[in-house]
Amino acid sequence: MKNVSVCFVCLGNICRSPTAEAVMLRLVEEAGLAEHIGVDSAGTGDWHIGEAPDARAQRAGGRRGYDLTPLRARQIRADDFQRFDFVVAMDDANVSALQDVCPASMRHKIRLLMEFAPQLDTLVVADPYFGGEAGFETVLDQCEAACAGLLAAMRGHLAD
Image (tube, rainbow, N blue to C red; front, top):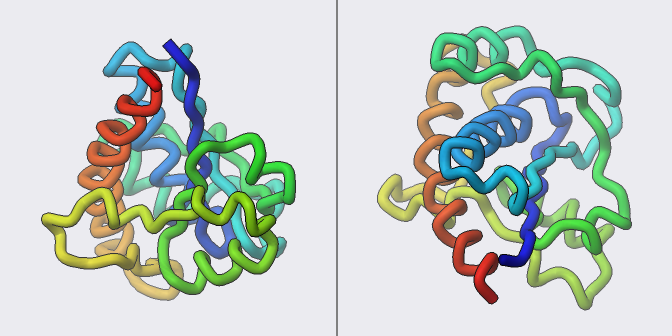
């Protein structure tokens, strides 16, 4: 069995992408694939490097059994496009920012998270940062649905 990896990307790496990382880590663990699927997250911006996820994201995740406390924000780096098989963005602005720093030969790795949850009929994981607690619950709903679809897609790459 091959190994495959994913890096989730949002703007500051303190709300959406660490939530997706926590959701995916649990799905991978539950599937017994932790030795074969690598999971990380990063931001396109550098404002929050080294910081823990937003307290609201931690609380929302905690209510569903996800532990975001060990995660720390980092900025996407050029070598991430070689390290990861999937670089999964939360919205079109993040896709554009990623394309600006990604070598042309690796742009095929950049995807939108919500592509993996077509049943939700949206391509955007809305940024909850400037809103209330409900936005973080919506992010979790979207991440749970889309990460399940992404895991199914990643399973296909394990056998390649």
